Image (cartoon, rainbow over all chains, first blue to last red; front, side, top):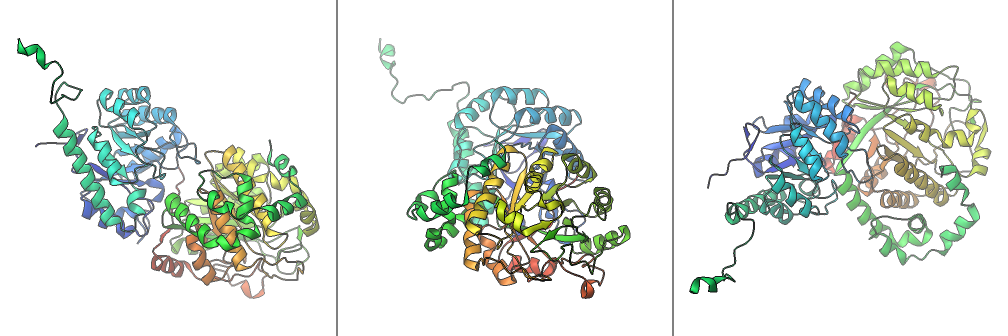
Amino acid sequence: MSDIFKIRDKQIKSRLFLGTGKFSDKRLVKLVIDAAKVDVVTVALRRVDLESQDENILDYIPEECTLMPNTSGARTAREAIRIARLAKATGCGNWIKIEVISDNQYLLPDNLETLKAVEVLAAEGFVVLPYISPDISMARRMVKAGAAAIMPLGSPIGSNRGFKTEELVRIMIRQIKVPIIVDAGLAMPSQAAKCMEIGCAAVLVNTAIATAQDPINMALAFSLAVEAGRKAYLSSKRPGIDFAQASSPLTGFLTQE
Amino acid sequence: MEFRGILKQYNAQDLKNKFNAVSAEKIKTIISKDKLESDDLLVLLSPQAEPYLELMAQKANQLTVQYFGKVIQLYTPLYLSNYCINSCAYCGFKAENSSQRKKLSLSEVKKEAEFISATGLKHILILTGDSRQMSPVSYIQQCVEILKDYFSSIAIETYALSQEEYAQLIRAGIDGVTIYQEVYDRAVYAKVHLNGPKKDYDFRLDAAQRALFAGIRTANVGVLLGLNNWREEVFFMAMHAGYLQEKFLSAEIGVSVPRIKPHLGDFADIIPVSDKNLTQIILALRIFLPRAGINLSTRETAKLRDDLLALGITRISAGSTTAVGGHTLNYEQNQDEQFQISDKRDVAQIKQMLQQKQYQPVLKDWLRW
């Protein structure tokens, strides 16, 4: 079954995206990427130290990975835009995950500021992936402004509460034509599988892997779950039909004439 | 309501009665709650909670790993000047200890910056005594302008400033403000702050809020344990931090609980805080304020610092000195220190200890843009 996943023109090899915070050892980041064959990796630019001999997180991310710096720490569109430009200037490529958070209590994104940042950065040629609260009209506006994918949260960052936004994400999958990637809150592989079963293009996981007793095996488990969910989605999909087809049709008698 | 209004709702005797009246049975319910109320904090800080420290530790560890990961952020203090016109009964820099004073020249600041920067640290805390004459805001600003070429995060710990002065230093490049009330009880505050501008309790109490109104990212509040009954003091400080968190949603609020250490001269009225008490304090703070940064001072021994790491600590200093120019200039022999340091390990040693304990040392977690 051919199932090619692209963001813009870039073919993505894995539908499990990885966040790099919270690991007990930076070397684990590389071991996890290798074991779970992760492709897209997000890094907070605030943690990148290009001058350091042994402390640069980028040294632990293999070159063949797709680097997606994020704007963690930004409270406004203006700050996110400046971090994105800095990321590009320091050689982190032109992908940017926009994260604008003005509420440190629950770490929920500010969709309006995020939209403003999408408008500016997409126009500057960035491949923009906004992290948002799942609001369909905001997502539409962001796509219109040039977002390459939409990253709705499953539940608040680091909360381990799982896929609580399912109904809203389902609508988004039906209505939005760019990839939908659930980002944040997924605690267990079964929740990642659920996201994939309903048609998400990918999921991003950080806390659940980084803080697991055995991060490498947890990453493998997530990778298998993502693959399983994707296969289930592809296998159940019937072109043009949104509803399940009953194996014993209720109107079967009509053909008995 | 302003925080000073909230403070006024409590009096010491009521609080003492409340501490004694709590039922420890409640602890099990409290630690399974999502959001704690101030009455829950009282329970966690009460004497009755002592048998439950292990249970609290399990919860505190889980919250810390969930919100921060197995990650500890490192920084070091840089003392710019110890000229001070305050008389604080507990401090080595008080005005009467006037013999050995020092203020770094700008070229000395650069020298200190080069030395610290070579250790890999990117976060720095700069400190001055309270002297608008010897270390005016303009001097701090000049220092910040030098330091920002070396460090990605600069926090200040100095005398209480006006909102406009905080804004001026934020424009110059600082992103953090540390200001300890030292003691929240007004009577004790008046007793230990004998002379100088620091006598103004309310101006100091509102300093963190002024810095936050000016747009600071990180504000750190603290009490100096040993000046008053610690249960009451930690309760007020945690309420202060919680108040700031709710009022300034985009800011990061941190707390510190340094224990008083001997210094030049003597301050006889120290109310002892045991290691067990300090442990309970850190656990209660983590459970009440899951997202707050918690700092652990080099006043504590290396062993205790290592043991407390997993219970909620998110930031520690490394390679610390409390002497002006202490990193590069050999003034220590004849200079007063603010307090004595117990944990004298340098950055490499602290990093090694963290790695052994399977914690990631983070030297850079901010950028100036």
